Image (cartoon, rainbow, N blue to C red):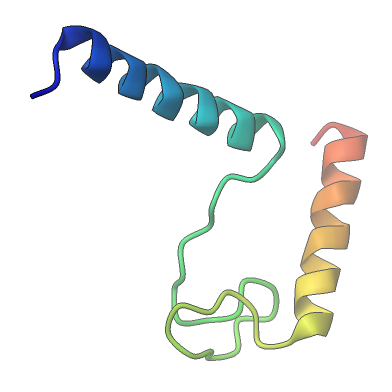
Length: 69
């Protein structure tokens, strides 16, 4: 049976992992059934319809981050 210290450690680890992912820009996007770049229909649990859309999306996001938008 875990005690309060064990539960606290687990909460701290979860918080740190979330903060690191957010700081790295690794916030997860939700799958919507459409490509996140061109809005074409995609398979379930898929964000982009192909590598080109993924690369274009990442390039666009990088430019927005650099420009401070």
